[in-house]
Length: 218
Length: 218
DNA sequence: CTGGCACGTCAACAGGTGTTGGCCTACATT
DNA sequence: AATGTAGGCCAACACCTGTTGACGTGCCAG
Image (cartoon, rainbow over all chains, first blue to last red):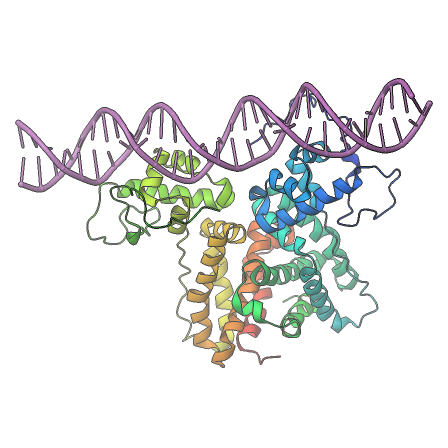
């Protein structure tokens, strides 16, 4: 759609630094950046607003103008700090799943733990729903979701799975079940999926995940 | 977003008939409409192009202009025949899952049959991927997907499930696993999910679906 | 043969989009 | 205190969107 700039950015903003993508979400002072800038609060506000809008509306319908309005600043600031809409999305879609260490958990309880963690994580952060919304529509979003899968779900399975060469497949199966439930419950709002309690959800899904994790290859 | 028309359509096109939504996809002469119109071919071309575009690009990025160009006609024809973009989408997102009759199948084989049918159906019709893409982004698309769930998956489960009051829940669980795999394999293109053969897919997923279908409530 | 009408094209509209460059202001450093 | 600069706003650009109405054209009924 948008043409690639042929040679070099014509006249970049005075302090556009994409090498230092902010990760802090709402907390203005998370992490210890080398030199705190005066605009960090604005940056964080933009990022928070972008997360909300992307989550609520998807990539295309989340307009820079609306994000800027939510953040209480001018649209041009978004461009100055994040280059363009894709850059903003890249910064806003940084996701950490924060999986706990499961190596000490009894092997047959790992499925349940995984499911519970996913549910709590999902319900505590609407960004995840948004990322799914974008991952389905947008190529960059899909790439981001594959990355999250490869970098955050895979290792957990690797640490538990008996046969290393099957770990990738098993991780994908787990992802399919967990993301599928997230899709039905949090995105599509299918009534029976929404009605399930946490405990029911865990009771139904845990054996599935457990089987994908440790059962012999069929 | 778009305001509802308050009283009546101001001056509708001369022959806008939403009560007779065409269902025929690519075949120009499928079904026996009461009076075949001269424009049926155009209608079908629009519908086919719309399906492709919606599937490939999602609701927002699939523009009426692009659809019309694909169909080889003027954008205004789309408006004339389908009212507006939402109407076109409603007509283009008519989906039939064509579930076979499973009442004669041995109960413990139904899971495998269901999974196989889903895979074949999905790979034979890219529209399904498109509908998922739209269902995730667009409210009307989500409603449509809930409808498909309620009208086409539910009955299959109802016919097999022992306890009627649990059928809705069980159907939702099955939907979560099947749609989740479709998401990972056909939309997100996760490599390990794409690499699975049909047989592997069925071997892994069938026991899950079977359990959701007939296993005792945990 | 002639009128009406379905079919179709063209050009335009009003609004929204990402993006840009100029200009002002207030802070921090010298 | 002077000054360079980062932070911020404003107005505009070029483009694309869904949608509309006027205007031809060829088919079919009378």
